Image (cartoon, rainbow, N blue to C red):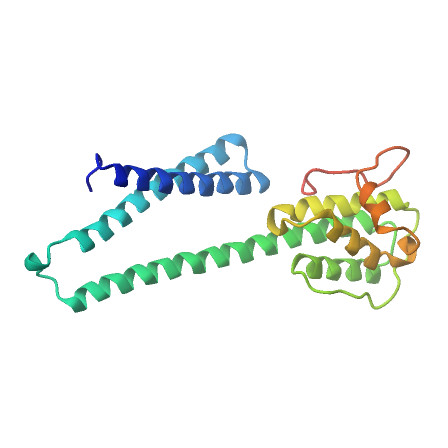
Length: 225
């Protein structure tokens, strides 16, 4: 590759910017999983360096195939097709690994949300009701319509406590779902319909982080801690 060629420079810069974004997302993900700044920064630089090296190698390979003079080719058409097929398989493997990583991340996040829910509601409701709430969490994560089998009764917890619980769950899943707070309001209205049936959704939305007065469930930026 001619690194003085303006087209090549532009291509490398654009590719590097995209890889940098991926590295930043990786850093944010590992921070959300409990890594400290040093560990997250190390992941950032590893992803950045490996990504740039892979990108440049990939571009050089493509340019080598495209620019090689036809009259000097000693590679058969079958070999070239095999090279392209191998590259496509590599990309498919990357996509499959990405999907697997996303699935594992979803499972881990759901497990943490269920554990937090069990610890939060154990003193105030029955095991059956907690199972219903946890089932609803799974449907919420995977965007499945949910209707509880029965009305849930919660003792001692105020509406503000339920709002705080809803915000904590929304904030926990936000890196994965990237959803609006209206979605968690809908979740609260369905799961805790007995207690919140007469409360307008707009009121709940405005009071998700309302912290005046006494409450049992506190707002938490990280439910794992």
